[in-house]
Image (cartoon, rainbow, N blue to C red; front, side):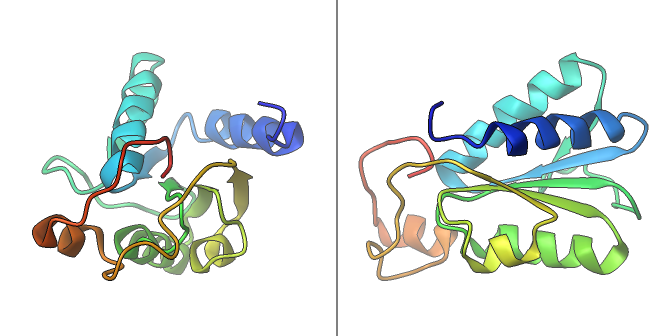
Amino acid sequence: MSELDMNHVEKFIQMILESKERKIFVVGMGRSGFVGRAFALRLMNLGFNVYFLGETITPAAGKEDLIIAISGSGTTKFALTASSTAKEIGAKVIVVTSYPKSPLGDLADLIVSIGGRTKLGWPKEEDYLARQLLGERETLSPLG
């Protein structure tokens, strides 16, 4: 918690509250995806109109909707594609990452930087699904 910029956390909460009447989309792959799904569930329990991107029931996003992209490295292809598309249609993008100076960070309206080990420098393949098929694994760690 001491590594978190509390101003960014407060802005994160404010942006979510401002999206109460809009759709909120959460995106993440691998362990970031697990965290994202749990977070989306909590938001749903609080009455927000929230979807985890990639599920079969995910509707189209619109202008002023909110995308929350979670990626330890800030380079996850699926999160990059989703965030880039969201910006094109006028949605807001919050990025939760360990690398604010990353391609995903460049797309963000707000970055919540979380310290932690990431996969940078580790995999031969950058794409999560390709790594899964290749059997490239590493021990579990949050946002790692």
